[in-house]
Length: 304
Image (cartoon, rainbow, N blue to C red; front, side, top):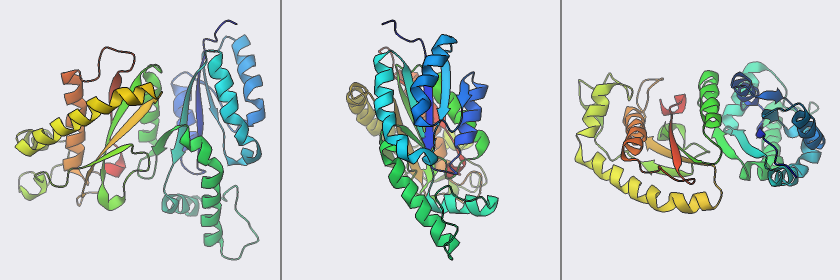
């Protein structure tokens, strides 16, 4: 059997988490996109697109196909044996965030019961039921927490992920504010709240983690260099085993307290995360092998 020359991005996730936004990003990136595909039609669709010589296909599925979603893992395994490269992405968000989004749009959750008197409680129950139904797909996918990121940022992040060769392990650095909660898509979390805080410097206080003076300030601190070395040693030791375990993505989250500005509430963590990206590239820590890691910066509103 001739291997298929095809790449599939499979988008699943919670209702209201941004699947349509991600699908639009993939369409912009050159993928042929199909939304709300019933799992029973997955293999016939791929066979049809192979006849059309399609090379990049993006498919979105949601909980409305709950009864047939258990078919998906077996179908993906069969496609992989035919040489198809598959990128499963699962979009998630906190329950509070999803409740707020539904309240703002006044849309009904696909699993909600309109006969229940307390609609707020019914919505929370529907969201939790959806989490249970999608748990297996989530476990097998790269999870993207959209709780605190804007649509444009999600589009950019998805485009970055699909631009990295699928045979490589992608290392994603993101920063966040502890006061907003730990991102649900974090594989590793490093707490940098003990590092010197630019907030207490009157000159740096109005600045953010995007500003060069904040980065320069942190680079000059011995504790920051020590933290770099510790994270380097940890990642250098464990990335190879994760690659051998067929991991496609590893998300490293850098956490700080968070400050007063809505858009840049964690300058210390943001700047540290940016330094990690440039530093790993400069040190060539993850270069020159099939199990190497591409470093990408993910700086979303959750960091701010």
